[in-house]
Length: 240
Image 1: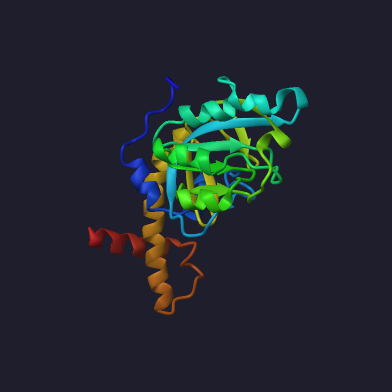
Image 2: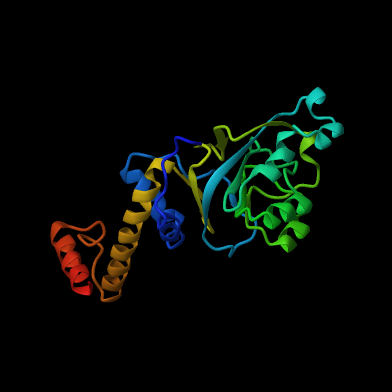
């Protein structure tokens, strides 16, 4: 979108060094609470931290005249068009209405997305062909796997529109961070500062962990008192 905030080139690298837990705390400090997608988990653990801009796809409730097998080949069918339109580096983010008894993408579509350089898929529904999808190696966060095709319970909606994924509002171009804990949506206009301040939060928490190992109590340490904050800042400044 032409009027979107341009992101700092360091933002994505900084976010990849963080966790979803750190990012949710940074957003909470800014008054943003509903950011962690409910029920959306990694298809397989150990996919690492994945970050990208959201390219959105929305499904509708199934209606028989909109969900016949012939729609799968229609050039304007959004669930197919999105596979070719989602840009390299983006995360295809799918609103599947929390329906887990039908799949939204399978191994062939996953392979095409990976070939085109798409970073990952996030979906508040299921995928199909789980073994094949795993073999493709495209990182996926979803709510499970199911054999039936999407048209058995869903109709194609639109793409690059605001959606609700895992009970979280996602606007095209928002930044998603995904790890073993799940998926968090960062409003695009906050991404630069969340990334910057998240790095500082992690550095402070690593310092706290070291004090815990020394036997310090968490009282006054985490959250820090004024004295603890001053102690940390002196240590940080000494580190350069």
